[in-house]
Length: 317
Image (tube, rainbow, N blue to C red):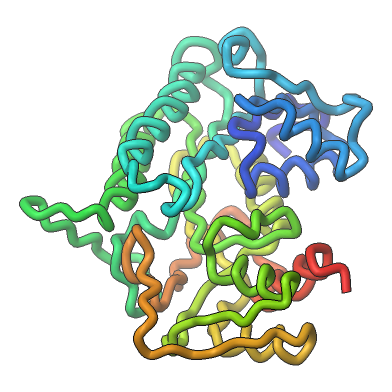
């Protein structure tokens, strides 16, 4: 293993959904010391309390990022995000400004403080574009109308720009992990995603109103995500991007059937309901590009496994 026990791991954006799953798994493993960076330390404290991690033995909580350049890290994991589109309230400039700010922070750390540190950045399937009618492949193309850029292309451009910049720093250890969908017990049910609405309707005994499009999603289980993080840490010199896959994607009808049968979900289909995301139409949002197998990543869980296992902790039924 390239990065041994007691490695120093910085997690930027420690309040995010993905960060919480990583924190939980790193602390459960107990082999690393985490540096949790956040602008909202009280939220992180409440999270740590909820998972019964309050002694601070294997983590340091940093309020803000003023001490970031002064610390020593083996790994920097950038989980900073701007939230879902409806939380942005149409201020899509944050896609660009926030991403650039924290990405440059990490890169400047590698340039000026520790060139051997591994930088893991969370990218997105959106790097392939804003329209998805079939699974992406190795040679899929992002088509951008350069003279008519719409807001549904903003996030795709941001992610493509970040990945291109990382490849340009080819002498550094930088990995982009493209997440298509992710789910864990730490999900925010107000984020507006389909699965969040499903669980919110069950908990609050509401009827789910959804369209009749049988979308496909690939939900990554938190343990599989932790696994690929560890595979990146095991790798030697590495500068690339990986599509992160589960063992099998899932159709919306399968989700509705399962939660109806197991938890009594009530739902209605509407032909006229529009659920187009601010980042584009994603009817089939998954990847057939299994390039992470090259570093030994082999997912264990399917999308259905992730939903079944992690939703139990939310529904508590």
